[in-house]
Length: 77
Length: 148
Image (cartoon, rainbow over the protein chains, first blue to last red):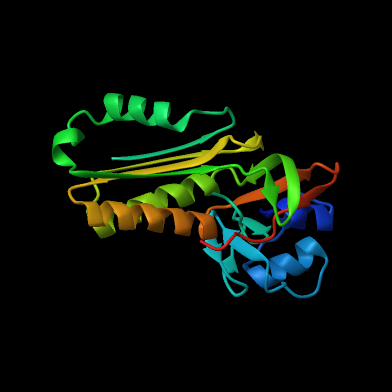
């Protein structure tokens, strides 16, 4: 099983990737998904995160099969 | 009732609203003593620069879910009769409507408050990102919302 990782907007452009699969057979934290998915050490304070379309934080647990998204502050409306 | 729509095609908000009210909530005209409406339109300037076009990116699936959840919470909190949210995605030009929020309730206080609340929460929680194309030819991501 794997975790689907998505990056949006300016964060996608900065990292040069929009989507990837992380192989994982055990639970990871959002922080670990960020480190492995982005290749960067710590989750920046201004990066928002969701797990399965619900807002989450660095300590949220991620299971195989989950979808994790990282994105900059939102600017709709 | 709760209606959320994301659309790439442009729309005329007042026509959309009249049509939606006529088709979806004929009974609400008697039940709802108040309706409040907000329409957000694209400006041709931002932070001192001329803006000629905008691209509105979103997170398919999560954006709809967030909007539905914001509307459902407002219905619960203010006992609203109906909520209608329409938001553009993709390419947008100055003077185009970007967002329409309309709420119906028994009395005006709930309608005014809920409409404002939905708009503010949408701006801070719904996953949309604006990229502006400037008159100079360059493109830049909008990094934060303007003050309400």
